[in-house]
Image 1 (tube, rainbow, N blue to C red):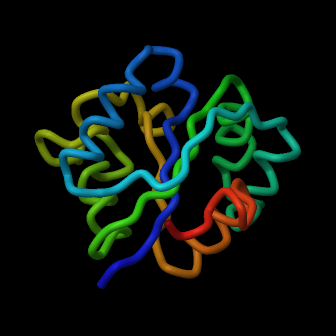
Image 2: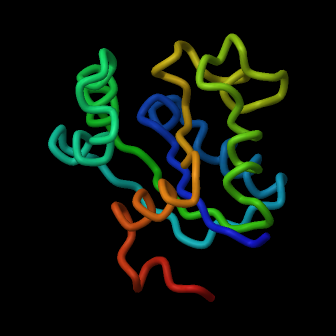
Length: 140
């Protein structure tokens, strides 16, 4: 099933100059990048994005981290794009991620794990709409 999902290269990935490497892996996995831009979230914007996690122990640290530097946000499209991208990313805890996944190869801790991806169609819709206007995310 053709679907879309949000992908983010987090501040640690941008800061370590591995944007191109991550994008190459995405394309080699058969996902099409249909929208892409670099942004820098404020703390308020990061809190809005991670609102679903408000009150959890990691909420403040993840929003601090995500607002600490630029991110690359993108909309990815492909067959079962959500599952495909999540498989390419690897487990949130990079030590548990499969060999050859982005997180296993590049993450330095559970928070600085290079990439983010939506976990469901509902989350993907919210996340894509959070960063992209209808014009930016228009189908080709």
